[in-house]
Image 1 (tube, protein in one colour):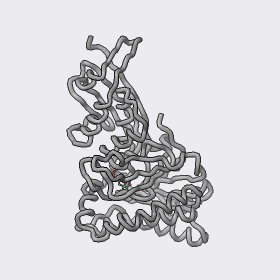
Image 2 (cartoon, helix red, strand yellow; image 1 turned 120 degrees about the vertical axis):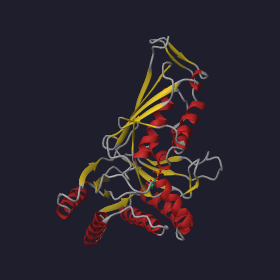
Image 3 (spheres, helix red, strand yellow; image 1 turned 135 degrees about the horizontal axis):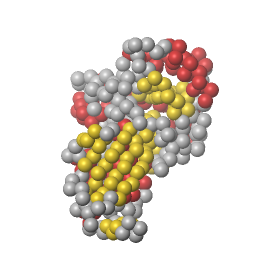
Image 4 (cartoon, helix red, strand yellow; image 1 turned 60 degrees about the horizontal axis):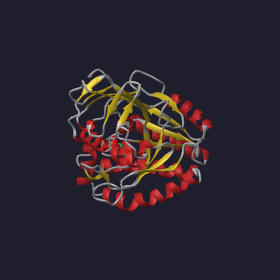
Amino acid sequence: SKKWVLMVTAQAPTNIAVIKYWGKRDENLILAINDSISVTLDPAHLCTTTTVAVSPSFNQDRMWLNRKEISLAGGRYQNCLREIRARARDVEDEKKGIKITKKDWQNLHVHIDSYNNFPTAAGLASSAAGFACLVFSLAKLMNVQEDNGRLSAIARQGSGSACRSLFGGFVKWVMGKEENGSDSVAVPLVDEKHWDELVIIIAVVSSRQKETSSTSGMRETVETSALIEHRAKVVVPKRIIQMEEAIQNRDFPTFAQLTCSDSNQFHAVCMDTSPPIFYMNDTSHRVIGCVEKWNRSEGTPQVAYTFDAGPNAVLIARNRKAATLMLQRLLFHFPPNSDTDLDSYVIGDKSILK
Ligand code: PMV
């Protein structure tokens, strides 16, 4: 009969890079020009929820993002769907009387419903949570028996940063050496309990969509920046080692110094692109000023800042007390008014894929 539908729902959190990925060496497979390290956020705050369904009555693959239908024609979606389908296995649901064989999956179509509980494409890593969730839920639906490391290499083909959302805690995306990307995977460094004093605040400076997508931004930077090669080959490899050590030792001053410097260097290579790319705005710059001034007056860093491909600030406070003081300062310096839509959320520090 054509009546049945089988469904799976999953949630995936976003992640924020503390050592940034910027630049691809292979655009189709999405292979980076440097390693990166991120922290995965608590899925209770910023996450994607995706439901995938399969039914013999579906006659094409379809997807809805935030309740609006979107096209699956892009290579990224097709790459993820193809890779998961290639690993699909037999599924049997005796109660419903459903039996899907490995071969059936090649002809069955899926419907995908994905929802972000935060602004999409505003430089808050919506694609990271989105593709991690898509790959994870499809893998569950199709009974794919691969670990999250293997799944990360598939999520990576949707969006580079997505590979890091398959794990909680601090995660490294190893750029890898292979041409086919098989060793370009996410590796968990420490779990979310390792450094649970940290509190992450996201100051939404603007929830508008960014003007330059990360894909075209990266391409233009790699093609035109004179600084990017030095960053990828000399600066980042050193920082990766130092960052891993700072995370292991919960060394906040080193962690903060590396995080802020790396964010600033990422925005510097964006400005070094022709034509220049500006992701931060005046408010972002004022947030940096405010944090730098406070950290200096305390003698030791209390808060680290980092900005992705958008103006929104991600502030990582050393503990709850520093986070509270930071929020008070933000509210003092940026009283809510008509031209700043600065809204603050306190983000927890745990993360789990349900
Ligand atoms: O994976 P993408 O294409 O969304 O690129 C992410 C780029 C940054 O967020 C700026 C840095 C990073 O490592 O997440």
